[in-house]
Length: 249
Image: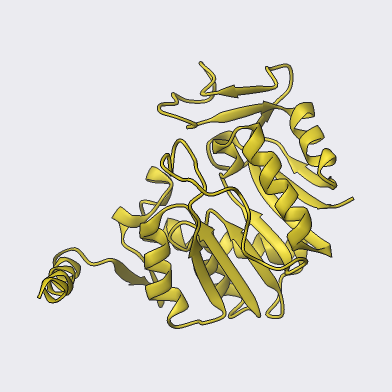
């Protein structure tokens, strides 16, 4: 009886407060399920920004329908929705996140319709997004499984040990010709790493809201794990993050 009541409550909740809407023919999450604050408050902003990311991967890395993509911190599906809108179904897309709600939404509204797009929650600890997490950062995918690894505004909320763990995994998971796109807060002539630096771009609140790195220190992290920076764009991403385009060295 309890399960029946729970299901009925969920149906009622979805009627009163729908989980999804359709915009330009694409199903996208309702506003209250989106990450990124005011950046993605408008339906068009959410969808077009995902499409822009798909175009970025097409322009910079040559993503196509035969590609395999790993999306770290996928949230409620901004990138995969953009890929589906601009490119179509891929051979393989895997999205991971440490939060339950976005993974549940993506499974229900993306994976169910497009089975090559699959989503997985990992219980890695993050003081901001998953403070009770217990798992080590070990991703459940085979060696050299991916052509592209994508993470937007993820390393911007991580300290050095976690970044090292992820970079080690990326080296294992990428094909020899694979590419990585990531964003991070990096500056010259600042401490090697600083959490929520004062008087920097905006006001930061709470654990890991902004983790900023000294540029050379961050580049050394990348090179120490077998990557090289093919392209660097300073301060052009959300909240003034910089974009890094990597390949295996």
